[in-house]
Length: 359
Image (cartoon, rainbow, N blue to C red; front, side, top):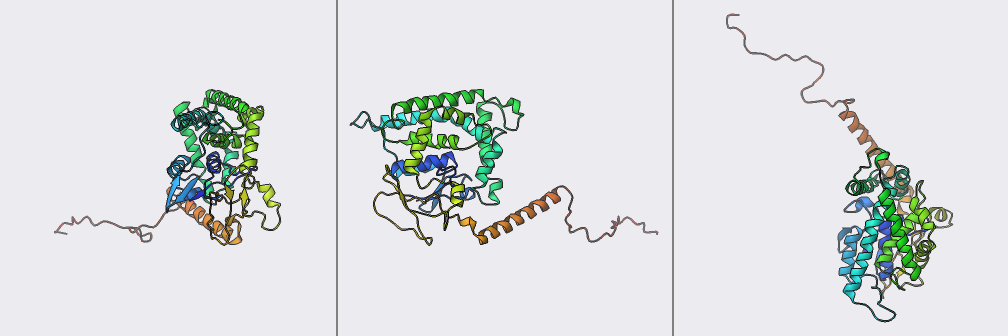
């Protein structure tokens, strides 16, 4: 199995909440997978990362990937019912699903609007994603997130992102999101993780949202200010990152200043996680025994950084731009194409065929 995700920034394993959520799920599970941090969303079945290749087929989206992993017996441990005994598995699963559903209903709408709907923020978010997507796909792949956000605002708030800003009434979104964050902070006051002493799928979901909200700098980031007022939420993000993603966390400024290969692949193992991160050389993957998880380190060499690869991208982008300009010129009548009936500027007269026989 191989997972494709966006490479991270700000010391995080990924810039994307759903990719970070999936990576945390895999780490908590101790899953044996290969993670490619230079994924191209254009190769994904739905045009969005993450996606997975397994048994020769592609599976896109967190939900579908997790369904496949669960069917294969891969998943974080269920919460314990007390200090020793494990609670009923079905009851615990129902409880976990209930927690996640509450977070999705209350935090997700405003989270998406802040990143992809707020006119003050959308250009910043688009730029962050564009830097992780190869040319020319970075011009239109981020548009999918905007369309998703527009569906949310239309169905839940009754306005379109194309409407004037005064019609963007997200006060209820914002209130629900802050209430949800307060609830999460209260839960974390009582234990190290959301449901106890071990991370579960709920913690993977929370890490996906909270890590991006805390680290992504936006012109109008209301929730970031709220999180900074809740020390337990900040501690949760920092603890998860340092414990499970000490090597996968990426920072472009740090990586650019490293000597030698700098952005390199390395083998890592989290101190409190049975999964380990390993890399391959020469394009070959080594198989290892045990339950160790194979992760490419986040600070790896980008295969798109070589001069030949850049030259190919420039040529491809130039061809795409040329075709686009020609298409625009034809559609707007600036450029006309020759037709079969027009051969020069000769004037053609039709013979009516009604001459009088007497003449």
